Length: 302
Image (cartoon, rainbow, N blue to C red; front, side, top):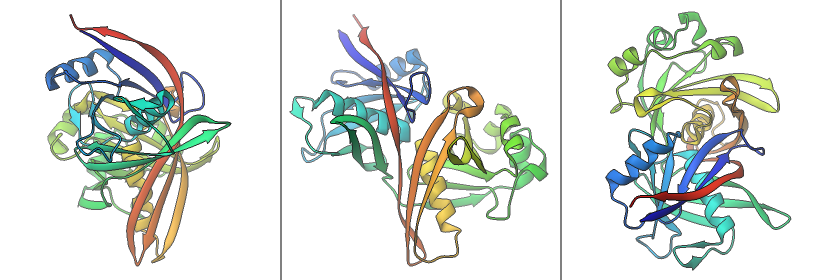
């Protein structure tokens, strides 16, 4: 049994940047255990497996795996998978027309809009499958200890460290400087003790820093899921823009930010984020970016 695959660099306009993704465009016949093994073999942050949709009104059913676990939703896998399928122009025998795709995932439906330049697909943007949801707060000193920082490196002027989600739970904490963000590390033992996999995917740190065309720099650590550090985390940054809008005083606004991630690990990524707030409530959040094709080949499962 031979399985075709494609890899693509997501949230970048150049090869060897952004976040690599492996896409299996036809995952029919694969068991869950095989999908997990293939994801572990690629050893990328995520690998996606494309199946026929349960509802023919949708484009596909997409399953997402890290090297260690299946995810209900993720950002760069959706953007990259949309890019790959749209460039192919077909999904499980059905032509892809127009600039809108809809994926069925464990967290819900994920709509994606495509961007074309001179007739070619260059980018995609998703709308989060779930509304912004805030969970428990964490003590700044605990987050600082987990991340190898001083308590003074964790900001709390806008919000205390908090668990939040638009489909995946993450711990969000603002750090007070770009230097503090750059020196952050994660102690896996403390993370497992205080923020186990059942509580959150990982810790997402960010700081306001205008550099290299971005307005925010961020880093995300999820070692319990087999991702020591992620070059670009759409499912975290789509929550981050929602958080920032939530804590703004305006009852109604459209907030857009260009977010950088992966700069401190040599995989610079650019994510375009937006949140819509109406009547004091964040109603929609979006994340998108450019993609670059990289590799294609086959996996021999015989």
